[in-house]
Image (tube, rainbow, N blue to C red; front, side, top):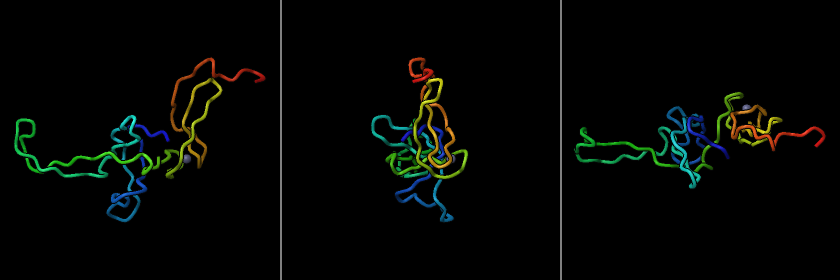
Length: 124
Ligand SMILES: [Zn+2]
């Protein structure tokens, strides 16, 4: 699965699965934890930490922080069809690679730039 910072995702597991009004939680990806297949999603899996007043945290008190969740617990929301979807990856004719929505088939952003050697040759 290809999830990137700034993507809108739907949370499909865990305590933050539903928002206050009972609809599935949709939020932006703040960070992708490379190598651990985890993502930090805005407002999801938030923990509170009580901190003493220091120079770094002059206000002290209760700080909230989002903890990473497994990437398999989120689904990308397709900007084209607005559905939580699986994504695929495909090569385009110019050799670039893009993500696409498995529901509507529309491309959702480039994964890697065009590479001449991957470009389709006539007849191959
Ligand atoms: Zn779509």
